[in-house]
Amino acid sequence: MSTLLQINSGIFGEHSNSTALANEFTSQYLAQHPDAQVVLRDLISEPIAHLDANTIGAFASDEASRTPEQQAILDFSQQLIDELSSADAVVLGLPMYNFNVPSQLKAYMDQVARAGITFKYTETGPQGLLADKPVYVIAARGGFHQGQETDTQTGFVKTFFAFLGINNVQFIYAEGVNMGDEAKASAYSAAKDAISKTFA
Ligand SMILES: Cc1cc2nc3c(=O)[nH]c(=O)nc-3n(C[C@H](O)[C@H](O)[C@H](O)COP(=O)(O)O)c2cc1C
Image (cartoon, rainbow, N blue to C red; front, side, top):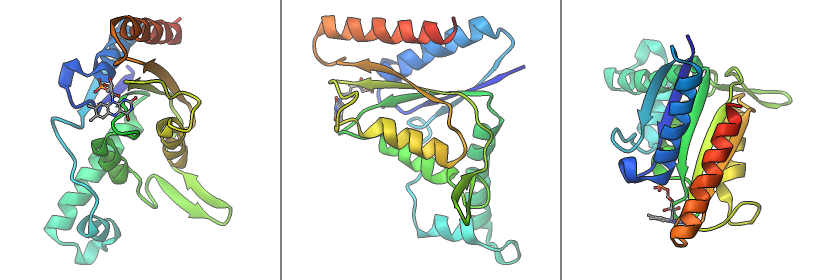
């Protein structure tokens, strides 16, 4: 049985284009893997606190002197890491808000980037400790950014997952969704075609 982790970060629930298209991806995944398990991590309905000194303190704490609060922080971070590492594939719904990833997604990344657990530093530089797996990123944008300086997301998200050892990151774009009905329909059609191709 395979496990698909779906991460949603669109703030409009089912009305978020990234979530709607990530749901489409998951439907097709289930059609191809009928006995698959889908784990949903919705970063909006269950927000993750932004990184702070307490969190870093907990990450660095020794077991012997760890407080219950620090243990709770570590347990939550570990839960997110276990979800990510035990998934066979990941679909990430990724809106563009003010030229970047949603801050809720950044908070998630700050919980799963853990020295000694998901990456380590070596003499030749950082090394990711997670097993590689396909990550499908459904990137919804109001305008058009692919291949331009304004696309701050593609390089960042790929760099982040590669840092953890995950290099198989594939982007599916739905661009121009706020540029009129025709542009939105065409964005959906291109994204749905790209999703179907991943299952061909
Ligand atoms: C607060 C906010 C900021 C946005 N900033 C951008 C932006 O910087 N560039 C862009 O092309 N579209 C921008 N948009 C449009 C969104 O990218 C577009 O609505 C996309 O569908 C968002 O994903 P979602 O539908 O999954 O929430 C913004 C939308 C909102 C609500």
